[in-house]
Image: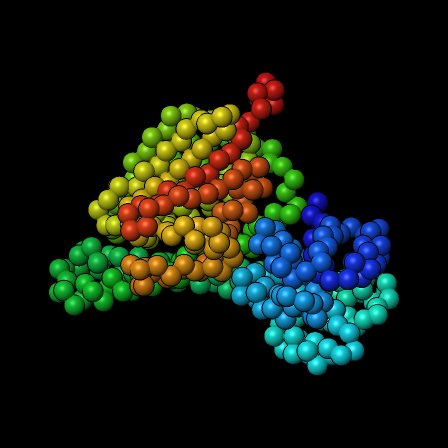
Length: 361
């Protein structure tokens, strides 16, 4: 069952907000209303809305600033503008900046319902078409890219003779770009498989270590990675959980790939699993560039968010991996977070509930 669309309405007139709530109250929407741009931006920081409807002319932070902030920080949100006669030109400028549509004041109930319906329909159609296209293209690219990667890796390991330093440097560049493209392909294919809004629960009983974690760690790209980083495990528990092994495997794969990608060559990747206050916590820690506190708090798990840290200038990524991880973990009633000492280490934690004992009997 798909979640109810979440809508935020921002207007400095309580009568307008009251009218909107009345018009939308019998529809299957979750509606939040606030009286200022400042309050609106605070809501947007805390919650991922499908649609934000904002008045253009407000004291303090106006609707244009709200639109600019959303475009910068949460471009996946759809913005609709309320406009009076005096701000029609500004509304047209807002459309050029990326707003979906505008609703002139005063508006009727059908007008408001129609523009919201059109915005939701456009979101659904464009998202599905884009995911379908990404999946098709990614599947077509996966096989030939794998051949290029395997061939380059064979040359790099010296199976056809020792490479000169310049040759080795060139092959390393090819391998890095192959890894980047494989990262994008894997994430786009993962996205195409994730109709997560239709997953109310996961009924499959899993040995979290044996069915999910160990198979991912045993993959050649992980166990025999180019940076010669050793994966050290410490499984203090062997929990039974309920979930989708393929989706959880995507989470583990992304965390290990990132640990290698951003880790210091020759150091260890520590993978631990413990029980903590009735939940099971998997952690993945690597030594490397780390992540700033600000990036952890504001950008780390956002879609298409790429962190720009000193020491990662040559490392490429899709900006989707951790966003996908967060969505999967949350659908398993879990949480994901990170701690770091910039320039030294970073550690990710995935907390999941165990399978209730009564369901296993």
